Length: 106
Picture (cartoon, rainbow, N blue to C red):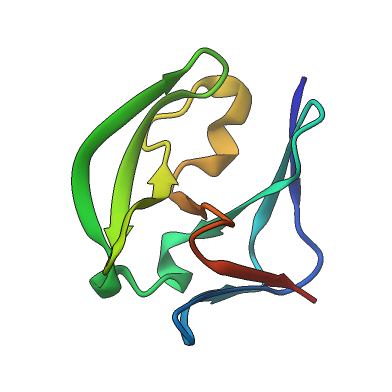
C-alpha cells in the first residue's frame, strides 16, 4: 500500500556541499517496507542544476517516471509528471536518490 502525507519537518537536499532543494512543503511517501521517499515541490528545487535525461521507468502503482541528472550523478532525480490518481499529490514534485545526494529532515 502506498500512502502520501505532508511532511511536517523541513527537508533539505545537498549535492557535493551545495543545497539543491529546501522546503517545508515536502510530501513523504510510504510504500510497504521501503524507507520513506520525500517528494519536493519544483518551486523549491534549483531546477537550473538539473539536466533532464531520456531515461524512463514505469511503476504499476505510480505511473511513468522521468529522470534528471546532477553533474556527475546520472539519473539522481525523478518525477512522476502524470502520476496515477491514487498518488496524484506528487505531481509537480521531485524525489532524489539518497545514495546520490544527502537528504536532511529536521
